[in-house]
Image (cartoon, rainbow over all chains, first blue to last red; front, top):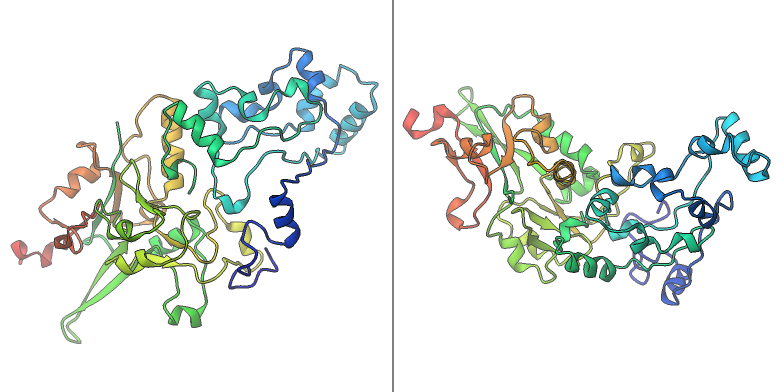
Length: 170
Length: 234
């Protein structure tokens, strides 16, 4: 972005693919999942009867679901499994006043001009798993659902939600 | 109930301070292009304050008129867009979808109010000015048209909050940045479908008129004449 000339990107490479490598990976659908700071297991936590909203607290209230801070982890882990190295690492982070640098798994490129809000989707009864897959089968979250525009539009049609462009793109 | 967003501009109250212009730039991440490019007509201001002189020096008066996208109901910019990037949405907003725009600039030529702007350049801000960008508003890349959205990001947020509480948006609780910044309260924004709203009552005023109304574009912005200049008060 910073290197882009004032006149924008060259016409061969679109704004979505800034380099030949980007274009190549997009064409062959090669995507690497981001590396998370700790190997958090969704499977393990969901099997202990936790639910998504316990850690992704913002999901019912606003646009972003939120990635939990170490304080959220330590609500339980100040008592539970304190002997594990990962938990000790997290406890140490909190003592130092630092936080985990979670990496986003799902998201949109800036050029898509997409504005997504979680809360209205939760209110209308869309399950988390509809867009994020069955996390009880995943350890570290991976991108299993391809969220292209057709995916959104099909569901909006089925649920008779607005399909006006301005609903998502502005 | 569907909304139909509109605005009333009271020319009696406008002092030409351009707070609306500044507020719009800040809210909507409008880039500046520099003096040379501005001289070539490439500057972007979603709202501008037009200035008209009346009389001969020293006996002159100045008239100010803020002009922004009139959100026409029968918009000429929409009819000429080959990709439907410019279209009418369900709330009567004249929407510009950046993803769809291929930069033909037909809309800019069709608009008789001159309120559509083409991005000749990639938006860039000198550090640390990029820190003041509004995260709720897209950065438009070079090659697309842009225009006043009536601060659609605020409309979306207000609608979302109202829907969560199962109520309608209260009149006056939602304002675009220009109306919010206007110290004289010259810009009044609201729902034209609600007969009780301030904007609906003011737009029915006998002082009201619309810009180039006879062209049939059905603009949604009503201008209230300065009282002294209106024929009935002359």
